[in-house]
Image (cartoon, rainbow, N blue to C red):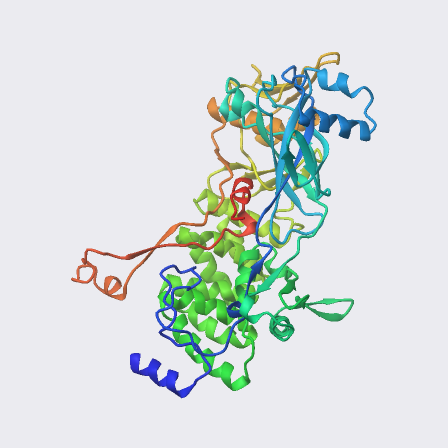
Length: 577
């Protein structure tokens, strides 16, 4: 192998040195090179990503609908800002509104992720400021507010242009108990933010390469691989704006995995003839069949596009799970049906690859991917089941299997006819959503739980369930339904219950033993898991001297950033600036 690499080096072959890239992480960038890279330059050699940081936006908001747990805010810059906003919106006697124990001043925070498009929704975090007399936000509603980038200078709040608007019911985690004031004064509005802008992203050219010619060459290299059609005209994804900056449009296939899109863009070759590409495909095939270099080789092959499909297909046939996965992942983004089975296998049996496999399956338009995701709805793993559901819903939200309905025009409600153990899944991120895995789930009596501040759910001697609403100054309302979970949920919503109210009722029912089904909250596949790479000696003979070496199988931490498809609110806010 060493002799082979030396021959290539001195022959001037336009390809990667097969010994050059040996990243210890399967998803690493391969920055640590054992030898200097030779061959064609890639876009990533000349430019680095720009605009990939999260933008934090904030607002001072008003919460209404509280049950005596609000307060009149203390004099502060926040109060002044909220009064000015209320007056601008024509609120009559705003000071009287703020003095009500059923309202509260809150701090609202959201994050605009890289690549966000105008109209995209995102989660909000809501909390009561320090030293406030407000005791709980449970059951509250965040009134319409505008989010901006904000700074406090001196004793005044300075802000920029409105970047998003926000509104919706506040969900306070009912499992935390009513006596914890700190947690009771914090909540989320799922999908309550709506972006008013599309965030630009692009590539910043390294100082030593900054000139108009290189900027144009980078844009042309990217546009050979990525483009779309507008009014029948072919439009490239990259535009050379200046000698320092190339703007990128997000390709639709990568809308839920922006980080991968940037990696593939940077793996595009700057200039290459047909014969040079053929030579590079030979080298990349050898790298693909080595687990150590498989991840990077697969991304370079994906950047080549259709000419690399045959090589990637060979990779999916490997007995090594790592090689098979990386090959199938790249094939999925090229929308090749051969990717479906290997990716489903990885999602089912390899937790470290699961989140990336499900995301890749969701990008495909082939029925083979749909079929495999449907099978994953019935596996024992909760995160695999729900991950498959989210992938199916992302693939085609109008598909009858997962379409569901908007219950009370508040949250997505989906009842799936699955065969495995019944499960109820609720979300506290991305979008308000409730999924029942299994149609005939029932509640057990006795039962007495709350659904928000005004609704009680109790069992009756007749074996039925009473859902009753008690509101001050209004007539009592009541529904008597069967013990089916579906009927109880619908009754709560019919009486004006919100998504947080339904979540509270289900969590209390589970806590008191009335709900026998599995109750899962945000059972999402995760990144950053360990994968144990087994050597060939280990695989052939577990009792061999090599397999009993003190080092054992190589344990690898998969460091690929979490795809947007499974990104939670807290992970968005913890993203690197």
